[in-house]
Image (cartoon, rainbow over all chains, first blue to last red; front, side):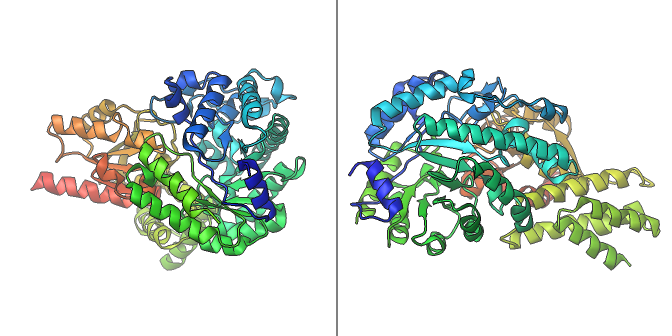
Length: 341
Length: 225
């Protein structure tokens, strides 16, 4: 079976030789091609080449169309990104500097016509042609409730969110939700088939239960209403969300959950059962200093908890560049070994 | 009366309800409570209460951290205008995000809490070089440098805390200035602060207030001795 077939069969609850194994290597692509990060991220063809090379080198299942998270802000007018030699780029210019900018914020009618989309489109075209029939192609989409953090900074967003200007807040959220709607449609049309819905405010680690129910949940419903939840993966940026899985399932009917490494995986699997895909995620920052033996032990633990009864995928966070190669190899070797049925 | 005020204020802070917190404070002023008593008997104990609640409560969330700091800072700012004499400052901190890091939320939470705890804060902003941290700490006679880093490469990078430590050592300032770090990478790896040369770390912005106050006391006791 191809990795794509394994993923689809796992989601459908059909027999597979092993669990799907996802590994999220992004910045490492530049190292593979011998390019500085800024140059690497300047062209879709570089990112696609980096992704294909990494996938081939390590043998895991997925490839990414994601450049860096701030790329979405570029589609909405951000024109300054801070690059580093040894880590992910940051948004350096906030599109919204004051509340008046919210009224001026325009969501492009067709985001695929925006120059900032072109390199993503080029990347997706290459990935689709090379591995589209055999491997899952991932895309990263920021929820309406989180997108403002990329547009105005997290502290300004928290200030608006927790303050009294609810009309201003809702105007921004409506625009961000519309953007999400257009973006998810664009990614689907371009061939992405694993759509990681990044929604940290969908965790009660960000807002309390009352605000989750009265604020986050309705906005997530709105985000997903037009395009549906096919291929959507619920992801809270590594924040725990076991306590709201049932509510999300009942309200949003999402089919895959990327469980926080800080959460009890057994509890998550028990809640989700065979109704959806449980993704067991390794705490990858620890891979920076763990030994290969420690890494293997942790992968073994996750697989033993998760693979019973199927409907389980092994995954990582966004692997930092500082993780030694021997630990990437140890992690994936163990995932293939302990993920076998 | 004071017990009722403390209880009502604490509940408002826990519920992230700034309006109610201010209503409680204004009510206390109307009943004749002094601005000094509001700070020292209501606001500071409330910050300390939140520190202990956040540690114990697995459901404590970012919004509570943020609003605890916001409410504390705003109430303190308002009350300070009503103080009969300027309050005694415990000490000084220079704070900023590490070189290459533009995430300012954690720093803002820490600053809000410190303001209420009567610590003077010099905000160096974001993407701060190691040299600027050390120079500012010396210029302001600060006891503590606080470095916030939300990404692995800014937490671990050679131009962040590691370089601050190197400069403090070179300039013979290690007994006079202590370094605290905070941010997501430290939460995932509780030993990381040692590897980058910090004296300590804090798990969240609200708890950082207490850790910094303790560091200031440590430096001051060392200098006095």
